[in-house]
Picture 1 (tube, one colour):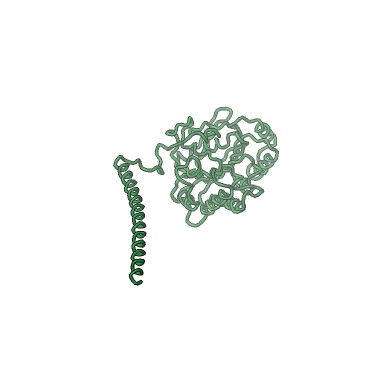
Picture 2: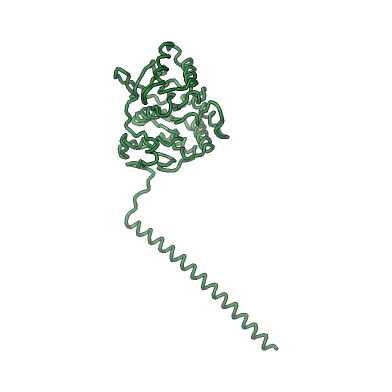
Length: 346
């Protein structure tokens, strides 16, 4: 079971390990939405569920560290791309195959990509997940951090906007038939394509302020949880406008849960803030991408190789210099001999 948090009475809020479900996590910046999503990811990874995290912000490398920042107390998940990369971001076809067919969980850090390249990479990734041959042997889960980048309701972030939105909307609609689940993390419910948001069977709401986002949530309720009374809904909205970080409401009719207030359980891994993203490094205690440490003999061999290369370069330069001098001397000698020969003829 996933321990998401506790209700006001202190009872645990438990969700089943069903990675093929679709979840929306909504809250303004600093409300704890990525923290709550990380709480679920920790338990999925602990149960061996393949998780692919698309991170355009550059915060999910914190999974590799303990909650106190200890780099040896986190989860051994490779970070591909970004400031804390174990390896460069692979081609999207390779990334999709690795997640679907090999069951390799990864953080795909897109934070250093331009928007055009980010959306193109993400679109190709989603298309390949749904393409021929990439049916996972066991259910896998996709995390979309700052989901409006991938599935915007309106506007155009780049020339690949439509392709990216369609690819993930298709994944949201029929991905569960293949074994793919999806978590949509967003600051603004109204900014996410409704074809994706309404497909989510569970909704975790943290602090929400804008009226337009409340209307988007109302649309979700009409699709997924029509039995909620107006009084309960009004109470929830009032509390959400003043909710403390990590406090919110869960609607989960998909999992048989009702309308539940909760406080998110503490994470076991680091949720880095802006300062930590720039200052901390998170090396893995075991890193499959790190080169093998070199021995003393290997160092001697390396020095010998560089010395040999240097001598060859110097020798080549010297040989070229003396070759040029020889050619010049030969030409001078031929010129003198030709002058002497002409003098004798006269």
